[in-house]
Image (tube, rainbow, N blue to C red; front, top):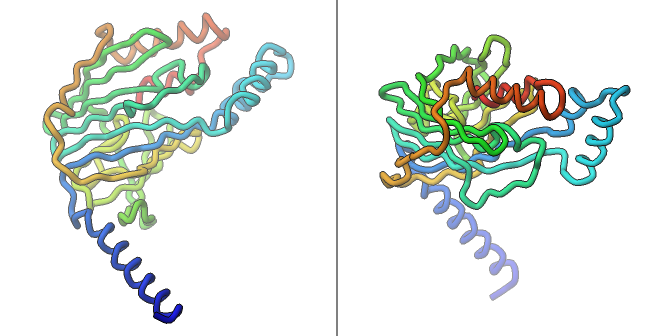
Length: 258
């Protein structure tokens, strides 16, 4: 067979195989699993909070941190979902040794019931775990005309302000019917596949979508820790930060409320 024919044949089968792979995901997804990557710009946090000319301790910490860690702190989470339930939790193989970013609420697990509008969370402050049960917070989304493609899904942009002053940018797809998303974000006409808090240097982005039946065991969330509430958790975080660095960083307090 001539080389040109071989190349054409190879390209033909390549196109078929790509079409087949993309075709594995149905047009509308009602249940499945999404793997999210959470990215935090750690250097920006250090610049905003630790770049204090008169504090050599903080300057030295910044130098040591940058020498040992990349600018973007990345962690992986899995979101199991159907039309009524979602469970967001750190990927089982995920292990991080970052003693700066990971000290408070970095490995949140959140179980959400979209019928009862309740959520159950497990969050941490240092080595202490807290269990919080509360209603889903209402998010007043503002829809825009912006669109983006994420993992082959057509996504629409919506913006919001949460916690009085935190600006949120979300991209959601109505090809996945669950009105859920990473952490406690919810309430759009489809699944949130990317969300950013630009002023707080955090982005969550879907890296893989699997459309499949979700076993009941994946929703069997049994949190460990002390029963608490959002106010008590934030107070515990503020106390820990004040004891260890001298003041409470608002960025860490924010992570306890997501």
